[in-house]
Length: 236
Ligand SMILES: C[S@@+](CC[C@H](N)C(=O)[O-])C[C@H]1O[C@@H](n2cnc3c(N)ncnc32)[C@H](O)[C@@H]1O
Image (cartoon, rainbow, N blue to C red):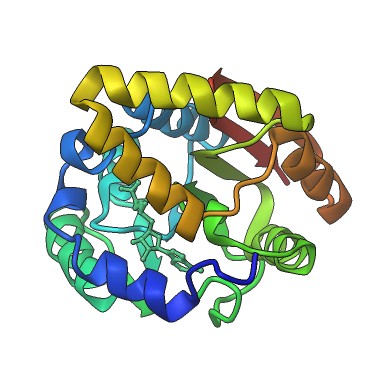
C-alpha cells in the first residue's frame, strides 16, 4: 500500500481532469453501469427522503451526482466537497443554475472536512471512497458520514468494490479488463488498470456494510452490482 498515490497526487490528477468529469458520459466511461447506478442511487434517495432539503456530495468532481439529484428533488441546499479546486469551481458553475437554494463548496479531504453534524438529508459518495486507505480511514469516514446525517437521512454510495475472497477479486478484475478491452481496446484497458493499481484501495460491499452497521445505520441496502462496481446505501 506504501507506493499508492498520496492525497496530493490524487488531487493533482483530478485538477487536470475536469473536462472529462464534466459529463457523465465521458467521466465515467470506465465505470461499468455508471448511468444505471447514478439513476438508482438518486431515485432511491428521493424515495427514502422525499422531503429532503440538504445534500452533501462527497468527492463531487464536476457535480454530476448533484445535478442528477436536483433533477429529482428540486432546490436542495447543496454542499459540494472535493479535494480539487478546479473540480469544485466547475461543479459550482454547473450546480448554481440548477437550484434556487444555496450552493456551498468546500475544498478538503473528506477525512478532515469541517462539516455540521445532524445536518444533511442525503449524502452522495460517487466513485470516491475507494481512495481511502487503511482500516482506520474507512471506519473513521463511515462514522463521520453517519454523524453528518439527520435521522432518517441516507448515505448513497456508488463505487469500485472488491470481493471478500482474493480468488473472486482476481476474477472480477479479469472481467473488468475484458470489459475495458471491448469498449476501448487493450491500451486503454492497460491505462485504466494502471490507475487503479496506483491510486485506488477499494473494499468489498460486505466490508463497507459492516462498517455502516457499526456506525449505527438502521438499514443497509444493496441496490446494484455488476462485476467490480456497486451501488449501496445506509439509512440513519
Ligand atoms: C472519480 S471522481 C468522481 C467525481 C464525481 N463523484 C462523479 O462521479 O462524477 C473522484 C473525485 O473525488 C475526489 N476525491 C478523491 N479523494 C478524495 C478525498 N479524500 N476527499 C475528498 N475528495 C476526494 C477527487 O478529487 C475527484 O474529484
